[in-house]
Length: 397
Image (cartoon, rainbow, N blue to C red; front, side):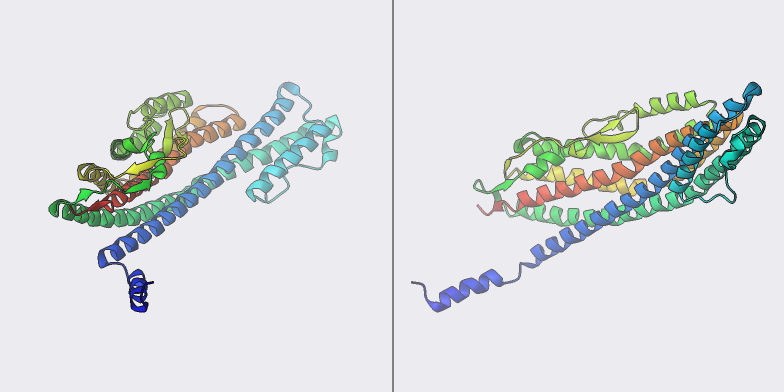
């Protein structure tokens, strides 16, 4: 049986505060987690703003369909909408306006009785058509004005990314110091030390623990390359919109930009891929249920830390170029106006052209700028977790 004081000494040792270095590391990890959560919140805000704009664009497209039916019904001596068709149109228009929270100053559709006779049907249809065309214009103007709120949300996201980047930089510095000390002291890897490597495999698309160091460097290098090309990507989008002649050319030119290898890679973190057709980031994490990691060499740890550091540096450099996003969106809106005016078509066709072009602008810009930088930052954070776990597995000879 052990004596009272021996037992008490064990308990005291277990409750002693962690060494200063470990406390600093824990604080840094916690600060980084908070910063990452704030980045996710910023992403959600941008997504919400984009969804609101997308809903409005969809409303324009739906109203344009209704307007086209009305226009067709009075063209060439047509008699206008029947009472049943007018009722369907009224329900559709009211539902669209309600979805947007839009309350017209006056009723868009005349009473259904006005569509009851052939003598009043044409005038009633024309009246309704004018109201819908006016509503489409107002929604479009609202979308253009709403861009300022979207832009503020994007700037807010990048502010949070910058703050999170500073946390990553501080953690990189601490791990570099710890790595240098391990080398100086001649520490060696503990062969008995094991850790759960599943999250690292999933983050860096590695089928097993042994491949994580190289996979982490490759993935982070891909993210750094894409991030470095993001300003020119946004500038290229602005140039496409600026010289837009017709919608088909916009789509074709955007496809050429999408083929950029840095943005077309399939080796982004967490199994993420880039769809060149939709400009969307998708894919899924690699399916790894179990993976036991062994402590890797100090050189491999150094490579992983350096890759995370380079991504953090690339992110800092990209922050000053976010104005190119604003320029691209403004050019995109201008392109939508230009294409609509030059179409020389009906109000419905003009509205559809505006909507389609704006959707292209929004998809191309927001999908990449909202998703890719935070994804890389998250990968850098996981890479530093990997470095920390492995450095903890070194001991004196």
